[in-house]
Length: 487
Image 1: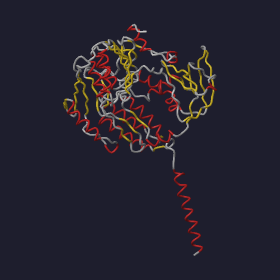
Image 2 (image 1 turned 45 degrees about the horizontal axis):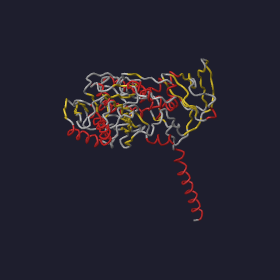
Image 3 (image 1 turned 180 degrees about the vertical axis):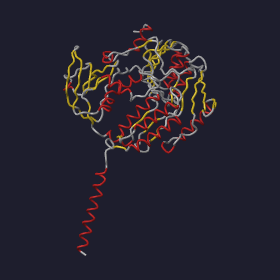
Image 4 (image 1 turned 60 degrees about the vertical axis):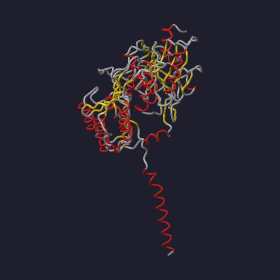
């Protein structure tokens, strides 16, 4: 009995040891885990079927047959195993051809959690692209600032030319239509993450740069960080702004006579905007303000109802805007959620919009009506840039078409004719678990009947140099002040 009990105890601890060690041995990092080509083909096929079935951009810039061929060629090209990151990069290049800024391929939830905990190799210098060149923005540590000084032009990093890095990074950024300013805008803020994600995270950086018209090289070690510290590119707002925090709106008068109002809308929030607009436009009326500057720079959009409300204070006549969809339910619902919200939106729009069905497409026509009380009919100046997208472009497009505003800045990343949005479910691919964002509605700006593939163009084009950025100048606002003879 003693012999048996000893063997039993030894067997118990052996099994316990195996059970404790096996999960550790079998657990593999998602950063290095590879998926078989059969798994990748299944994910890509599901994504193809979903996009061809529901994506509202199909037929706008290219035909359904064109995209079917693109996806089929992509699927046929998958002949080897890939990591999640490698597959995601290939999918991002593929969906870039949809020309839709609301379509995105994101990491899986578990991948994101894992990578957010890791210290990764970064360059101890931050770089910034400006006018298709790359410059040193700042050093993360003062100790190494003497190696690469602020403002130096970078020609190569670890053998990759500036042109090749910028071109590759832009393929990772989706915008509407054929716009380039949007890609340049987002790359300006995200280059330090993009190029390392695409070209690797080396232990040592070999950098070729231009100084006093002489090409030089420098070599330095990487720095391990969880993330890159934020370095603000814009000057801080002063305390003279009145702020509506919930509405993400702030404003101030630019002159003592209160004739010119500067209104900054960071995003079209779903909260607090009605109260904010009412109070602001009431002040404009009381003070007989003659100039309204609306800052839509870096405004990525948001609530349609908010944008309609703003336009109701500014437009002189009623305007139509149409949301259209050719699906009744989300296709392949097992890979997504939120179908109830999609159906609820369709149901709700029947009461606030006029519904018209053409074939398999349901059109919901919203009428934007001018408000009589506190309506503003005087001069408007709108500041725009490559970060102006979605609902901010809806506002800009209607003001542009009705000759209600002068535009200053650069072309928007949202197009004149509309975008694909309304509601944007995420599809989770079954094997890699990548999250793919796909819009369900086409937002048509009914005032533009043709497809341009381009954003709102400014009346006064603004281009920043690297020195303007270092000086934190606000060139758009300076231009408005020049036009209005304001100091």
